[in-house]
Image (cartoon, rainbow, N blue to C red; front, top):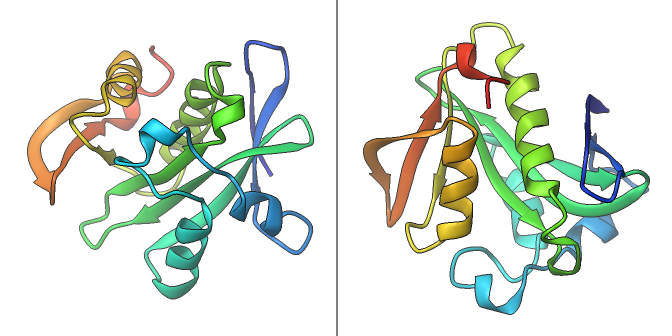
Amino acid sequence: MIDYGFFDRPGRRVTLREVGAENWREVADVAPLDDQRSHVPAMAARYLLLSMREETWNSLAVHADDTVVGHVMWGLDEDGSHWIGGMLIDGAEQGKGLGRAVLLTMTGWLAAQEDCWTIRLAYHPDNAVAGRLYTSLGFVPTGAVDGDEVIAELAPNQVGRH
């Protein structure tokens, strides 16, 4: 379990846990709001399959107290950069500060990993809510793109300053 002591607005402790026999079905069923489906998959099951089939990504369940409320992945690129990907908070749970708590937890944990020199993520430029969240936490667009997504990064020495 990854626990950096962050809480959502209702006061639930936000932790990241391995996806296993006890929670994989709940994680697979996580679904965004309908209007977000142009930016993310219809269900977190796609991210689970991606992390099972490709060696780059590692899936984690997002828990608020003991309830699964989302999914997030992390990966290590060939250039040594650490990545956050596949973040999906269940539509019914959005607007409660979970995304911020997840990102603070992930960036803290990734920055503590050996040889972490940068943390990157990518998002669709039309996803204004995500863009504002990432910017508020210190992520800066690199000018590079991955398909139709903007790549942003955070230097590990910037973790926790926002």
